[in-house]
Image 1 (cartoon, rainbow, N blue to C red):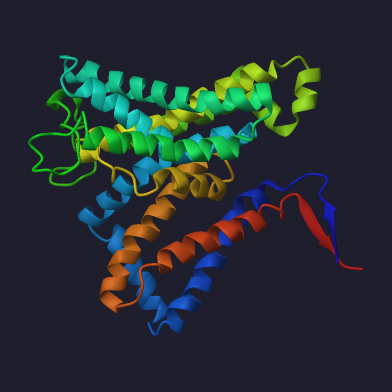
Image 2 (cartoon, one colour):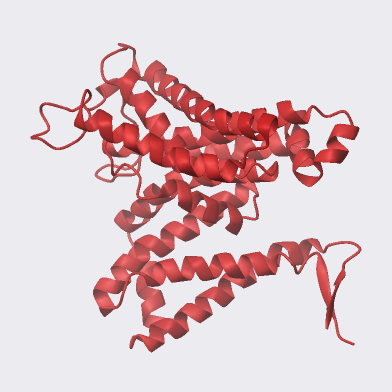
Amino acid sequence: MRLEPREQPSLALTVLAPVLAVGVALVLCSLLIWWAGAPPARALGLLLKGSLGSTFALTETLTRATPLIFTGLAAAVAFRAKLWNIGAEGQLYAGAVMATWLGTGMLDLPAWVMVPLLFAAGALAGGLLLLGPTLLKTRLAVDEVVTTLLLNFVVILAVNWLVFGPWKDPMAMGWPQAAPVVDAAVLAPMVAKTRLHWGFVVALACAVGTWALMRFTTWGLEIRAVGLNERASRFAGIPVGRAVLRTALISGGLAGMAGVSELAGLKGYLTLDLSPGFGYSGVVVAMLAALHPLGVVAAALFVAVMSIGADSMSRSLEISNYIADVATALSLLAVLVSMLAPRWRIRWR
């Protein structure tokens, strides 16, 4: 058996391969559910019912998907240029810190001005945080995987100092959190008596905007070209260093907007548990989407469905909700393998 490159990748195979891969992963998870002593068909039914079967379940799923769309886009944009940004978690918190600083009384603006300003400020904070590791990569060849990963802990420790120290809310009964943002900085709920907020619409708009940027603009062409072949890009006259720095600002900015969305739409105040790891999950979402900005939305929804639905399933059947993590991991592995199918065919000797 040997792998032979395809002359022209099939569009149908390119689209169907990841879908079939996720299906294979769900079949494998069904075997694990059966091994755990539960009927797979009922378990998957409860999973879908718990994540999509009611207004409350659906809105919770969309709420969970919102930060995953932002961080998935951040990873997808950076990875397109072979800028391995593993620091979306820290960039998310950087955006939340900036929104807290501006949104807890420093500015007195109407909501229609305050909310876009907070998103812009959060994007700037996240972009600048990624700019440092990117400069180290382009100027000194320092591995950005290490620097972006370690910056996550630096930022989270800084947030820990803020919420236990100078920003601690005296009205929080000793709980380590900052003061809540003003009413004008709060993202209103989209559906009454639910947690779904307008940050979801902002995330969708960012996905469409990122797709248009990557598909129709010179900046997007430069990002894709640098990721495909840096040396050829230099030969073609593309300013590689400038393109990578621009990519860092876009990627970090998207992750910073996730922090603003969670702060202004869900929590209302800065705290250490603002993110349970959305920055790291964004890498999984981006890979499941094959780095396509619109695919990121579908991948984020899939991960959210598995996460929210698994909690309901585990309560009903008394099996571990870690099945959702296993399903996500298997889906990622299956999708990574399936990405070979459009480009390579198997030849038997």
